[in-house]
Image (cartoon, rainbow, N blue to C red; front, side):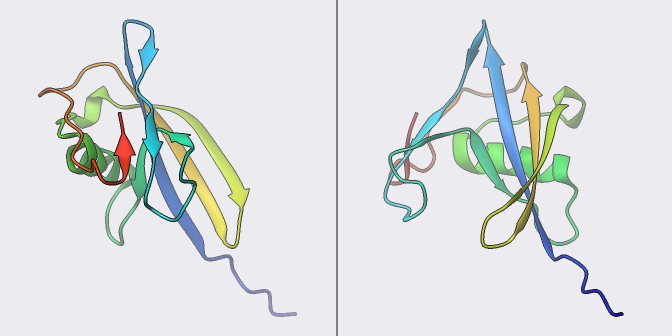
Length: 109
């Protein structure tokens, strides 16, 4: 019996924590989950580690620089939508630069 292996998308989510608060973004104008709150998040690209992807997404979305050693894996989740997803949640409490909304058309911070 030939079993087809799952083709999984790997997604990363940033739990950016400071003084007991976590940064959330309100999604808009994306066509996906608009009106819902989300963490800074994105997809792992081919050839990229999940932690490098998280640092890249943080820079692209909110303009901060995160050193890899500042990331702490806090949750791994498998979920099924129209595809298989592995979601990796990483916590960070220290970063460089001020938080800036680099995607104001798509989110409100």
